[in-house]
Length: 241
Image (cartoon, rainbow, N blue to C red; front, side, top):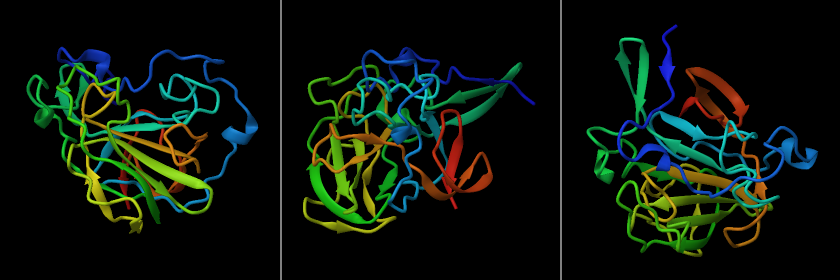
């Protein structure tokens, strides 16, 4: 089996890729309350994109994801970051890249401008659509979510899709959406160092800071293996069935 280089960033952007959070606190993700670790998602969720994507952050430990223990019970606790990668064979393994060229332009990144869908049925309760996209390697910490939407699934759960491309969101507050409906495009707005999709499931709060919950998606391929119900974990390649 070929060695896969985990350093998927080879340009000056380095590890600014998914810096949606600042410092980590807590127990290093080894243990946490059973109510969170054993939570079963109520909404029938499907992956919110087309094509094959890579899980850059996702899981229930520090090793798997950088978001989850920034604050106890915070909205980003089990958030997932997705990018698109292209594998290139090198002499001693495989190099995963998220962009072509030097990656200094958003358009260099394979996921920038890609279609994003509603992961489940619900009602749009909040939309921000006018935040400029960052130049890769810089961030807008004053507006951390950037362009985002909140979908209330009307069952105690809400979905947030964040860092979307400026002006790409095609739904408005009060709209009803169905699973798989296009809602916007991947961007690089807010507290984001490079284009990616930030997804989080949380309890109903109407704001970004609700109670973060694990998100189990239905019927998708995980490293080419069909799974019926799973939570994406860092390092996996996933796509819809």
